[in-house]
Length: 243
Image (cartoon, rainbow, N blue to C red; front, side, top):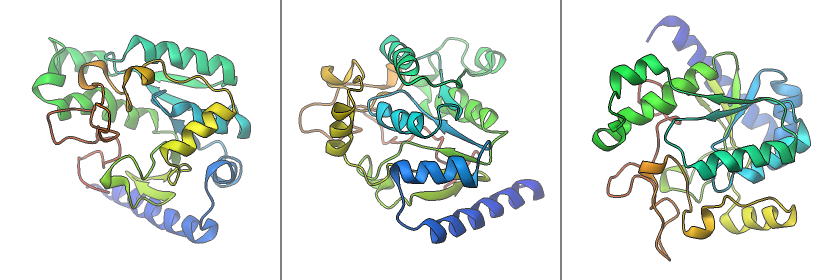
């Protein structure tokens, strides 16, 4: 680890701890307001998959500040329904700075020339198509907003509202919301559901690595089914280690 990276990581850890102490249990729209308008104004982005639950967080950010950059990772392997859902939400919510980030085509040609890396090495595919492009996209920012919630996986059950990762402060404004609260908010605000949800897709990522969830199954059973993989890697350090 070089000194600059080590310094950035220490800064993020210290800053995240200070913000947790300062803002305590604040979350949702209130946390978004503080982080985007006070603590990191002009230095924060929201990262969205425009997936099954994304409309709620996108609606909240549109209420706070429609100009906050929204980073969308277009991996080249997404469902067409996701791309159309993205376009509909962007127009509906009036988001003014949505950045579709694609993997480096030179790297794709070198590391996934046949387009089947997802099958042979899903971790390497996620790194190529999501982790590395996101790291580039977030280079200009000090903080970013995620849509993670504690109910989604065991690994996320103890996440704080504010944390650190890869030298950035990470904000998790919906961390305590459960599936029922998210759906109630979506319905109350007349937000469109992702078109694949009613077809049994509860957590939606890239098409080759996303399956339907059988009734009664866990929320993320449809992601990388048949493997022990639960995360794409963007919530790990860029070197693959834990935060």
